Image 1 (spheres, helix red, strand yellow):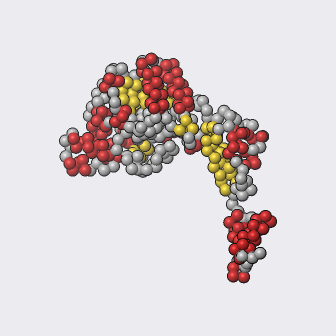
Image 2 (cartoon, one colour):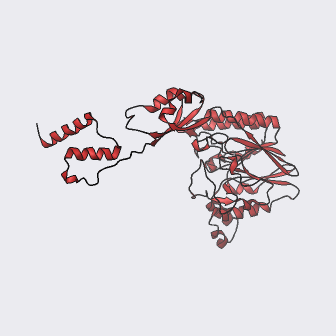
Image 3 (cartoon, one colour):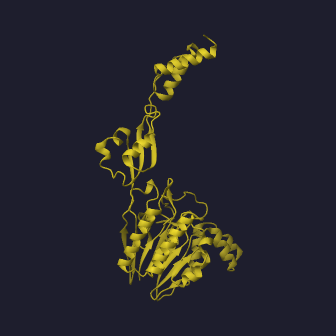
Length: 390
């Protein structure tokens, strides 16, 4: 069986207010073109179909069109699950009749224990869940209460779930698991969640790859880079689109997975329609034509960090507008402030200083600069008024 493994589409995602829908549509067209060229037997989407549990109408319309094109127009079986960003109950609507057209979408834990059977492979679709979901499920299944109470962590819950799934294995077939968790090479090692919350609440803790023994291939979602894949046959496809500046330099794509007597995988890189470029330079270099002419001006999105920036020297300037005239769309503008070195005479006695001198010293300590003549005149005028002097 040959299938395409992708995940984390996050339809409806924005990048600092900029819609990514056109980028997502472009990536989908590339994915579908490769699926047709490779004549895959199915398309796996390993969770986070949408970016929000209640997606916008535009996001729903876009994803529906994608499903129609894959499943109805091109007749590809689709094997999809809900991720932690998806509204599992909302997505569950209509799954029975969708399954008649080989659009398989599991959003609830109990659905994972009914594999999709092909001639050669059993496909288990295990959606994102948390330990509380597992406790409820196993209690309803008649597991003793003391064993249910022992399910405290995601690792505990996953052990119970995968143990039950293994009892359903057909020894004459290969087994594929599709799921959506942070999986590391070992229990002691954690991985960076580039586009996800760092919180461990709600089941976002890292689990170890050793828990997935017995499966011929595990198609993971949740981490947005394929480089985080914890083993040869337990892989992340990564997201098809760059979602933030942490992902700007990463290669996006998906896997073609061919399961015969063994498992062969090939990563296919996607070319973005609009790339995300991160620049970290000083202001003078950013506005130097010799530098900016080497950049894809008005063709990419730019995230710019201005190094060693002297905010006082450029007070009142609309630097974003100025840079946008050069580069085009700037999705993020950040500053690394210039450090001002201040040296003072520690022997100065504040009681011996005039009010004007105290202000001058304070301003110099904060900014590293002396008051200008105009600023000194304003300070003098203010104190004259305070003293009631003419």
